[in-house]
Length: 90
Ligand SMILES: [Zn+2]
Image 1 (cartoon, protein in one colour):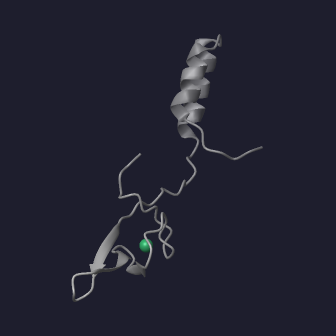
Image 2 (tube, protein in one colour):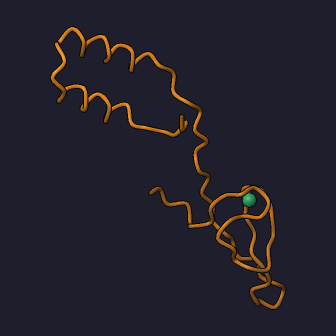
Image 3 (cartoon, protein in one colour):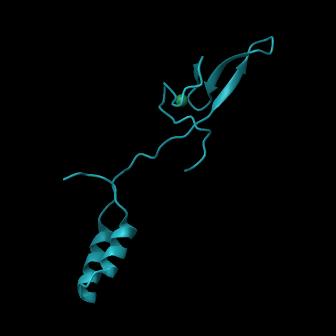
């Protein structure tokens, strides 16, 4: 069985719309509420900072969180794997 992530809320809505008895629905709701969640690793977002040389020319990029410097503004930090999309939540 595929061990993917599903929505507790979606299952509860599905149960509510089913033709189970209220007692059965209650049993399922309790079970769903008590099943521990998996530790889904939250996606880390980051941002490249600009590093200028003494002449004011853009020299390279730095990920301030982990200190990794890079010559290119890659979509993911090669050191810590953060998604370098500016830190916005999706
Ligand atoms: Zn990093």
